[in-house]
Amino acid sequence: MSPKFGLALCVLLLSAAPAFAQGAGCGSVPFAPAMPTPADMKSKSAADSKAALHDAFSDIKNWQSDLKTFRACLDGQGSQAKIALVGLDKTKDADKIKDLKDQQQAADKQFDSSVDEEERVVNEFHAAQASYCMRSDSDKSVCPK
Image (cartoon, rainbow, N blue to C red; front, top):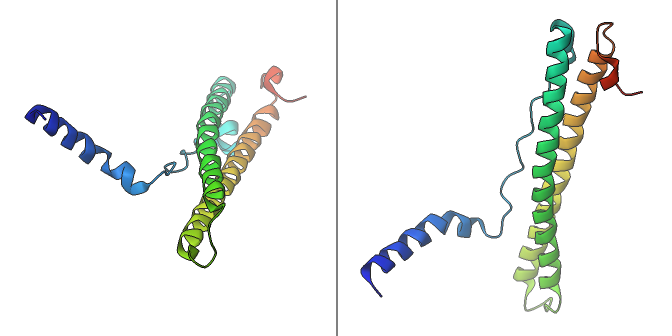
């Protein structure tokens, strides 16, 4: 092996070490976007409020795309754990079974937490939207019917 190749391999392995230490983890839940508050929607001009509402909607859509990828990873982890449990002996592989079940429960907990966060953010968006739509000077075409 050439010295340059060996050095490159060492650098590659060291840079990947955090990923190996984390295991097959999916990382952390994507950060939720900040939503304008109903008070913000009332205090801004109609045009600024409409722009803030549009930006918030775009942020939510982008974030939900990230959540979809994150949740697909979590589903994959849960499925892998279920598959790995098949055929294990309850007496000989008790530690391995416990670890796999713990991994599955952790993935389920992260999934559920991301759903709760999504619900909170969407509710905040709807509150801002309702506040905007109650304005007499709002563009009613962006309001739910």
